[in-house]
Length: 160
Image (tube, rainbow, N blue to C red; front, side, top):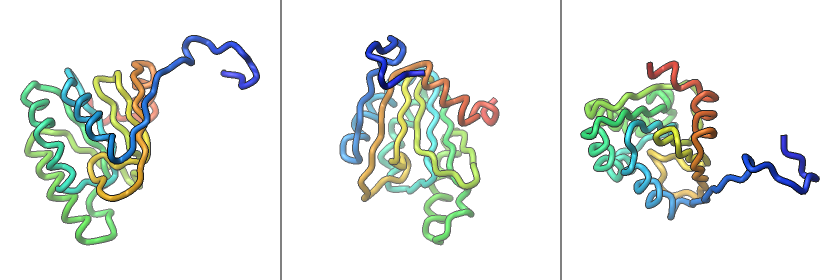
């Protein structure tokens, strides 16, 4: 454990991370997404067709390259507003027709992405629905922290 009063920082504590807001996130995310070789895991409680359309070309290229893609979201039936239910249902149908694995988690509110179990994005931005809000996402390149998040969310038990 890191002691705030300890002047020496263990080398394992030295990580590089980058912060993004709603205006800078998607450029960086799409660049990383396009480089994926094996797996994309995204957790986003809300999905809209508008935002999904901006990601579909890259997602389709990944599927063409046989990259496994899984998205964890809320069941559309759990949304309060009817238009959110319809939006999410339509978007999920598009994803499933592409061969993307869609999982539902009750009371889901996590916003994160794990790319090739090497890059971790986490923060407040709903990756699959962000539209008009002030958000933050942190990008960390770390196999250890990516795997830690996979274990913490227990997503593997639903994918295998």
